[in-house]
Each structure stands twice: as structure tokens, then as C-alpha cells.
Length: 193
Image 1 (cartoon, rainbow, N blue to C red):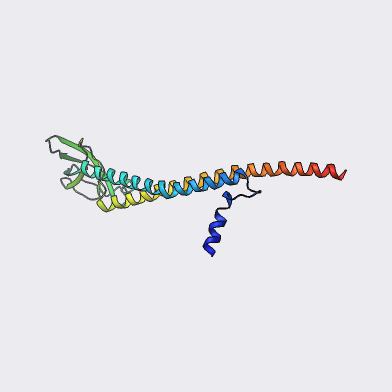
Image 2 (cartoon, rainbow, N blue to C red):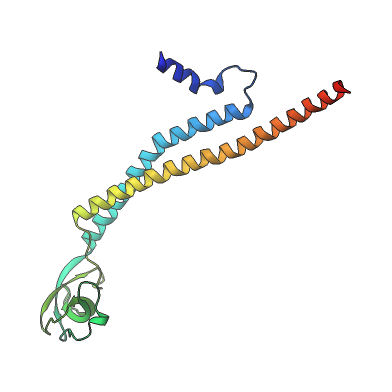
């Protein structure tokens, strides 16, 4: 019995009723559209965003590759003020690309590392130093986060649209109500005189 009452109450905007206004019906349709957007577009946006994030991470993993490089000079531990978080300093390294060309660049290395030490450098297709690609686990977490954030964004935008429409419809209802009260008050004034 309760379920039937709840459904009847939620469908009041479409019932024949002398107090029902066009704004009430329009608000009902806006609410239906919002629920459809949240139910259909939200998950689609989440899946698409997760897929795009996973694809981008997979592409970065295929484009970047590790190269063994040699440290050019000692990394002094006397200037910790310029050290990056984790006690690392930028130092120059040299490496030979798979095509035989020699390259150099700066990467963060541990303080106190001696010249001639071997370090791993991540390079891109142009043999430029780049950040390490995300691991499979990191890519999965990124994809899940992007999917959830996209779904949440769609739901938030739909809810904001509904509340914006409701503000406009409430203003129209108030204006119509004030106009009707003015009509009634003017009639009351004529009969009282």
C-alpha cells in the first residue's frame, strides 16, 4: 500500500488538478530528463573517461623506455637547500641511444652519488629525458578515478541544471501567484466599497 501511495504522490504533476500549473508539469519533465541523464549519460561518461585514461597510460608505457646512463660528475651532499624532496639533486648524465647517438640531460639522483655511477633514465621516442610511465596498478587507479570523476561531474551538472530550472520556475510561479492575488484583491476592493 505504501509503494502505491509513493508512486501516486510522485506523479502528481501529471494528474488533472485545477491547482496544477504549466510550471509544475515542466518541472516534472525536467526532473525526468535529469534522472535519465544521470542514469544513462553518467555511466557512459565514466566508462569513456576511464577508457581514455587507460589508453593514454598504455600509450605512455609503450612510448617511454628505460636507458642506462652514466653520471658525469659527483653529486655533492653539501647543498641540501637545493635538494628536491627525498634528498635528490639534479645532475647531468650521458647515455647512448639505441641508434648509437650520444645524449645528455639532467635527472634527479641521490645525494652523494659518485661520477661514473650507472643510473636509469626514462626517454621518449625522441630520446629526450621524460618521467617514468605509470605502472599498470597506477594506470588502473587513474582510470577508476577518472571514470568516477566523470560520472560525478555529469550527475552534478544535471542536478545543477535541475535546480537552476527550478529557481526559474519558482520565480514564474511566484509572479503568477502575485498577479492572481492582485486580481483577487482588486475584486475584493470593489465589492467592499
